[in-house]
Image 1 (cartoon, rainbow, N blue to C red):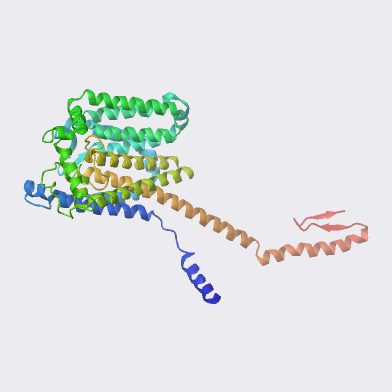
Image 2 (image 1 turned 90 degrees about the vertical axis):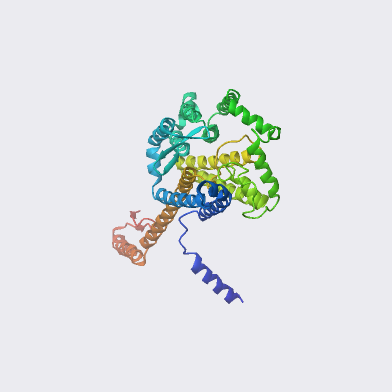
Length: 444
């Protein structure tokens, strides 16, 4: 029995001990693929009625979403091959690109439902706020690395990135896009806190931001209408509260396990924007609480992995990579909370997509690039770890070779000579002693 157990142990060791570690985070890849797949199925189901009416093709939006996924995967593969050193060097220039996009959309952008957020170049439509978010987070991570002492010890160092955020927020509010401003502000607060900003600065920033959001709501008529509709959507179910009440009906019909895939009633053009901002309502109606919980768990796992990668990067003295990973994790979590909170009536309605699930090319591509950045950061740390292990093995091999039998034999030769010399010197009333530690001869 013991012999068979030892043989099994040897076979297991031979198979697994010398395996090369996987150079990427498999869990992160599988989660992203799962969200892509769920998003494609639900977007196809939710968009069929409106696609049939607008384009005489029920799969119009499904095909477009499939093309966006292919483009997003291609962009992610390109980013995977770009070393993080590029982002460390280029992040100030990416900030200028973000500002340029936000200015350009105000000049040549296309207006949809009262918001000017899209730049149209031939068949390509770009939502400028999506790349602006990613580029700003890259700049913020670079700034925290370059000016770490100023951020932690100096009020002006703490305030400089806030001035940049204020500039971007002003451009975004001209579109208007308050949801993106809130996500960027929350992510900035979190990064500054993780970087070691003083607690009073953190609370002062939070209070100032909250006061600014309240002011923007109070002094804007359409935002105030959204707040009143959010507080009591059933007071005007066919006016300001129409979209939210239809979304709540979808949630109610879904119950625990849903009406079945494709059996949604609210997607029959009762719920506006069913395949974009309110995709979770259709998911809830067709797959129920179980389906929504599954998507939330997948996004939660992705956020946890991003935070773990950030923590590991900081521990490995890669602060830029760590701050980028933290910002992506916080960004995904806040955007998910805002999207689901708006569709379920927990938060006022905001036009933010669900990461990797909702229909929308710009959001899908940029968030795929963000996931690719996480995989790249993790890959570089894994490669560094493998190289460190290889170097230590080589040093151990060189050290063992330095103590080879031939060298030990050559070390023994001086001792023989020393013994014969001691006999010869004994005739001159002197004694020669041999030091075994370093091979030196000493006269006593």
